[in-house]
Length: 125
Image 1 (cartoon, rainbow, N blue to C red):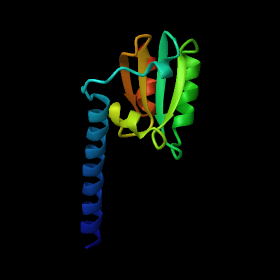
Image 2 (image 1 turned 45 degrees about the horizontal axis):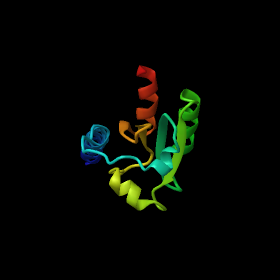
Image 3 (image 1 turned 180 degrees about the horizontal axis):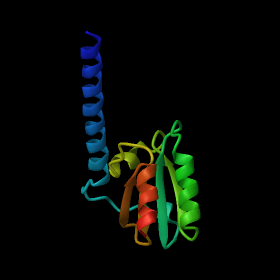
Image 4 (image 1 turned 120 degrees about the vertical axis):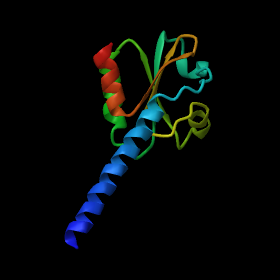
């Protein structure tokens, strides 16, 4: 009986991990068009990193530090989705941290979901 319980638990973990991994990949590869980033967030910068955060996001601080170190010439803007839900909805933010790279015209050039995606982005650039 114990072996059966352990086997069911292991199968549930494997299925749960596959579902979670697929969900994260789908968030990262989302192809919906994004609106232009408001000029008030760009402030005339050539490149702007928008980091969508929540008050309880443990990995958001390290992500912002990584972005500031990896691209010091770019503007870095933190957007608290609990205070700016309209921006989160407009940019289809479903997980924190979600990071957008916008050019000077406000067009989204990159969408990164999660701390690992940010690290991977700079590893390939």
